[in-house]
Length: 438
Image (cartoon, rainbow, N blue to C red; front, side):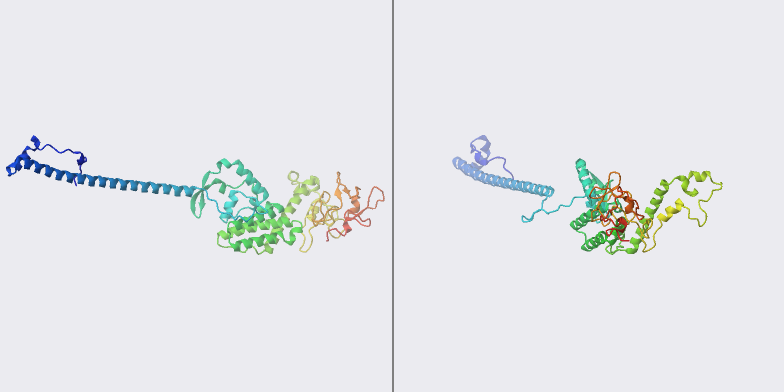
């Protein structure tokens, strides 16, 4: 349809008697109409055409208005859709916070939070040292978090489920202060395992695995050998090695029940611990002895210098002469099964008791400053004085020889003959009822 450029209603009726319409007028008069009738006919024809054009104009205007409305509505719809999409994107980026129960209060105990590295390891169900869950590990994590808060948004590449992904550096950066499980103190281990069990529960570890680990730690912390010499040290080594092996086997789809205690493995680890302490004891004792008192094979450079020379034997076969190296071997000789691993005191068939803690386990009894008896529960009756003397509750310095297996025969008033364990006058620490049983 031909579009009309302007509104026809604004057009004035033309002068049909003008030269512009002379041809039309002539044609009508030649057709038999008079001049006046021809002009009237021309006015009527123009009026009809003019009205038709007005109607077309109005239709055109309405069509254009409708198109404009449709365009405006389309643009508005597009704008609304864009704004809605922007709101959805903004909603996605907006931090979320879950609802809470108005009737529930904060817990009585708040478990310290380990580092992001340890939490990520737990989420991935991978092995992580218990140190991260100990008070020292959580304290170090808090200090590190404060000192590196400006770089918390730093990212690095990490492998996740066989794919490379971007993760925060804090989530896979191990602490340089972390220690192996067997190097923890017993207190650190006991506190860390509790925190560890809580975090694996929070992160949805399988119930079967949680129960096995809980039983594993219960057997360790309640083992009867805890009170024995080297007992806690051996148990810590068993716990550290077994838990590491458990995770390694799980990753190879060869998992075992960690909740079953392996006594044979424990005995083997106990032997390793004993041998390590024996070797260390040998080194310390050998370093304390004069070089001339040691056999030639232990004199180092002197042995090299005397190579080829005749060396006099320190004792003849069957002789009872004191031999330092043999004394070292005898003192560190591994006990037979069922035999206690202590060095007997003079005149006794069993190990001598410490004058302070009354314990018969191996420890430097002349330097013992324990505040508890050998059972680690009962307070000692005496204490060590400034010069290492035994001082009873009355402030008297007790005769140390009286507490030893050989006793003391002196009748001097300065020799106070009272038991350091119970205060009795008829015996010393070796025969005290509170001393550790042989």
